[in-house]
Image (cartoon, rainbow, N blue to C red; front, top):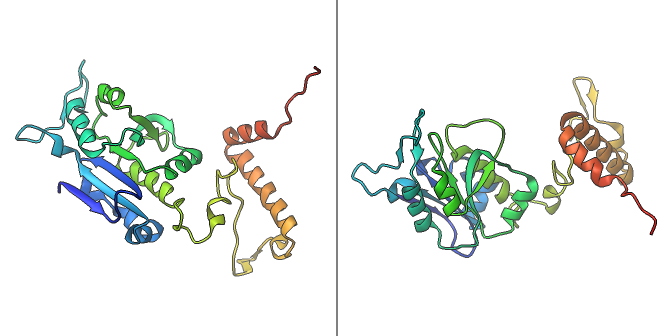
Length: 249
C-alpha cells in the first residue's frame, strides 16, 4: 500500500500520517464521532508509507545506531524525503510521536484543531535520526510516560482528540467546554438513570433543578478530584486562582 486518502479536499482540516504501516489507518478513527465526521467530509486523513521514499531495491528505511547499541534507527535521508513529498506547507505543524517529547495537553490539542491539521510522523525501532528532527523542524510530542512499539497508536489518540473539537463533530458545543482539562480541572462525576443503582442514589442536588447549586456542586467536585488525583494540575489551578500580591506605588 503506497498511500491512502480518506475523504475530503485540500481546504479542510487534514491529518497526514507518515508510517511504515499505513494499513493500520483509519482504525478507530473510522468509527463513532471521528468516523462519521470523516465520511461527512468534515476532515480528511492521509496515511503515507515511509518506504515509498526509500531508494534501494530492498526499500530500506533504517540502519544500526551510530556509536553502537541495540535496535535500528530510521534514516534521516529517507524520512526527510518522505516529509518533503508529503508536505509542501511550511507553516503546517510537523509532529513526531515520541516518549521524550513534551506532554500533549488539551490546550495544545485546541491549537492543532484550530489550524490546517498536522503532519504526524510515527517512529519505530529505536527512534529516528536526530538530524532530521532538527532539519525539518519536528515537534516531539508524548502522550504519556511509557513506551509503545511505534507511534501509530499515539498518532490516533492525538488525531481523535483534535477531530472531536472540529465544528460540526460533537452534538453540542458545550460538550467540548465542560470536560476534563477545559478549565484546568478534571471533570466532575456524571450520573444518569436509573435514579438508584444497587442502593446508591443520584446526588439529590443534581435533581433539584437549581442550576446555580448544581454548578457550584460540580465545580467543588471537580476541584476535589483534581486536588486528590492530579496534584500537578491542582497546583497550577490554585496558583491561577490566588490573588496576586499588590504592592504600594
